[in-house]
Image (cartoon, rainbow, N blue to C red; front, top):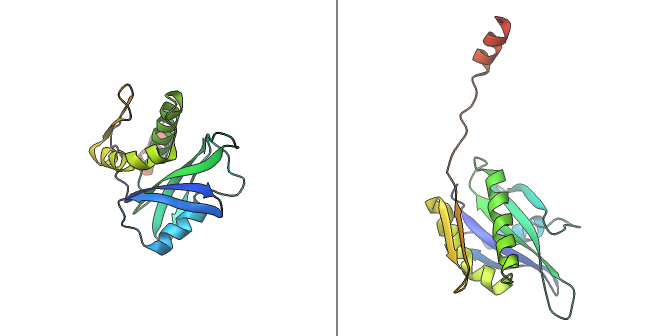
Length: 163
């Protein structure tokens, strides 16, 4: 379940803007399109979206970033893949767990998320994520890189017919 890239988008002063991507392998045109497609109009914190940009596929998790003295900012963390054969539900669970853990430890900050993007990307490659975010908080996620075997529809139909 290794993504091609991970991206971070926020609502800036002039609209949606790409904060960071890791690794920096996506062309500027793709990043621009991802910026606007990853966070649909009216998106709310906790929502999850999946779609495509050209021949790439992505999943984004929208979250709210607290700001002192003004209303919360809305952001999205995005995983971009070369094909559709990735575990969409697994991505949703990992992103929501990560954001909840950061929020629980009062560490939900844009610069911190930007800083841990490389570790998160490497964790996807290894099949487990271990990110030390402070002297007292470490986020650990273990997951298996499984692909479901397709069901042989012929055998299923045959079993039903001969019951």
